[in-house]
Image (cartoon, rainbow over all chains, first blue to last red; front, side, top):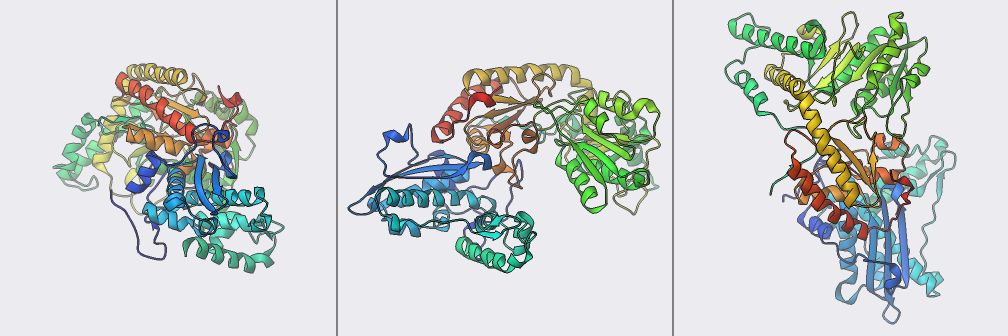
Amino acid sequence: MILHCVQDDNRYLMKPDVVGKQGAWFYTDAVKDHFFNPRNFLHGEPSEFDWNGRGQVGSPACGDMMYMWIKVDPATNRVADLKWKTFGCGSAIASTSMMSEIILRDGGMTLEAARKLRPQDVMAELGGLPARKFHCSVLADKALRDAINDYYFRSGQKEKVEVEAARMVDSVAKVTDHDIETAVLDGCDTLEKVQSRTKVGSGDPSCLAAAEELVRFYREKYFG
Amino acid sequence: MNFSYLDHASTTPLDSRVLESMRPYLEREFGNPSSFHMLGKTAHDAIESARESVARCLGARSSEIIFTSGGTEANNLAILGFARANSAHGKHLITTAIEHHSVLGAFEHLAKKEGFEVTYLGVDEFGRVSAAQVEAALRPDTILVSVMMANNEIGTVEPAAEIGLRVKGKGLRDFPKFHIDACQAVGALEVNVVKLHADLLTVNSAKIYGPKANGALFVKQGIKLEPLMFGGSQERGLRPGTENVAGIIGFTRAFEIATEERALESARLTRLRDELIAGIKSVVPKVRLNGHPTERLPNNANISFLDIEGEAAVLYLDAAGIEVSTGSACTSASLDPSHVIIATGVPYEVAHGSLRFTLGRGTTEADIKKVLEVLPGVIEKLRAMSPVKLDEKYLS
């Protein structure tokens, strides 16, 4: 299985993106292993799992949906156990499985360390994903953050909750920072491409400077 | 491992008879059909003979057949070429929401960049567009109507002849003209340009066990087209460039075989297809057939499996030696799910969970049995991993 990796600042992305509608995805052996033998997914009902934090992201309408349940040990603040369920493609399943394995290693990551784990780190351990599939791996990241927030909320530590509220960037075209984030994740690496995808600036041209700033921010956050 | 290739709507293997017909033109008979020596003349005569044969299969005249590099080029030549040559007569065009991307792309370009207005007709829950709908959309300035004969994704067969009749309006008016994308229909349905009332018709080789990147456009006598390329007189100036002789010969042989074997092969495929559909419905719960139950291509079974995502299923089946495709967003370049399934009015989730099985000449009972053995386990495993439990109201 040949890994098509390009040594540039997008180290974790595989190029060229050779996939078409009926094409073959060049998945690494690690991705295939996690995809065919996913670790830590929840068999059965959540009520059967002893969890104290729950996260949810996405919807089947956009093709990806993820639920995650964590069991945090309050004494050590470590993630003692983690289970997930997903409606998603091979990349989403493999990414979540790999992430769950990373989180639970060596007795489990502390919540602080878990919050520092990035999608790029998961992709590195998988040996890379096709560029177009990067956003699938972000799903697990967001579900985990949601679950960690939920744990803090339920355990009365509301001050530790980190909320990513959507900020309106173009109030006329109704484009939020989340929309720009999604566009960048989907491969729109310039302001022009983001504009074409989200129509930001079409309603309120004065917001373009802020939009460009966000494009740079998200590019560095996810691809830096 | 033995592979069950069930993705014939994407492309087909080259038939050995087709390969044999091409061999001389890949070896000794390498002449340029425009050359004046014997070698050139042999090549020229071969493609003219091929042209006659394709014309006969379609019920057309030899002079009405233009060889192209495939269905996409033929569709673009038909749509862009016709619109540009006839814009003085009007700038309104009609097509459907479920056409192949090569048709939609051409219309989109005309609308965005060349000042045309395009009406996209919707379809019913089975993906059918009606002749009445087409007629209702006609305007005095409509110059072209384009409707596919059968859909490549969900297999639905459109009432093309009936639509053609209405579009032509008893022959009393000059416009609009009628284009049919028949790429998926050859070998499955009778494709006769007279019975279909077609002025332009696209066929291609890759779906009928011929060489890829070959096809043809039927252009009825009297239809004016602007070429897409310039610089030679081949194909009556409509498609300049030294001809792909071996490809044309192969495509023609494939067309002849498909036409000759159509009746028997369609009956055989219909039986296998229906066995597959009934079989899947009986061993896998919560499934939905996409497209029309009876007015559908003999080889097409497009089924949505609720609560799971298509790409994951395709990969699991591939590992088990079964090759299919999906309408899920995750496998499309644009990250949009199948526009065809969405156009039939089902939610995105149902499109995401769709698998397309398209049978072919090499498909046997054994392949069907293999699918029915492997599929339930795959779907069960993916459903165990999935948090989604869609309402059964989406089932049919």
